[in-house]
Length: 116
Length: 112
View 1 (cartoon, rainbow over the protein chains, first blue to last red):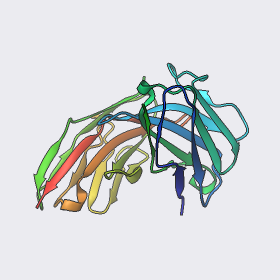
View 2 (tube, rainbow over the protein chains, first blue to last red):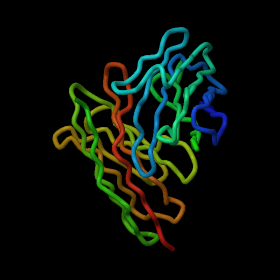
View 3 (spheres, each protein chain N blue to C red):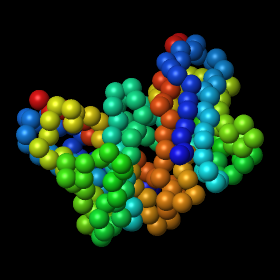
């Protein structure tokens, strides 16, 4: 149990376009979802925390207009990278917690974004 | 603020060697401590955790003890296998919003 999926697993886009990444909790209701960014051979950096039905809380230094997060249901959160640029290329990982899994975060497999 | 520091990698070991990956933390209050593992091309999986001082987390032959006096949570395994090759992340979760704060990760490579 406690499976989190992400879609797509990888995406290549042109500079200036927007890209949406989905994060789904498949077998539990996720009251809270987290979005992380991971650079090659580096740690995960928390970008934002989203609670179902409310606005996301962004970490310091993360542009909320650049990285739009929506958590409209208990099983789905989306991250939209708007007007993407090459420096936005990275590995984006979501995690989710909720219900009986409240004390533990379960991670998705990640999405590799490459902006040309 | 809260932070986690891990030993730098990569760490290269022969199969059946003993593994230690050091992790120390700085935190206010009483954080929970975690080890996550990331296999190539995959997301993070929880390996083990400890929620209070002197707790020992263990899983798949790995273990780590929450040492409050030394603010450490070192990961150990008595005999590593090739399949243990991965990146290992130490993390803490504060007692408030329970956000995870990760160390920089340690890449482990086990050779046959």
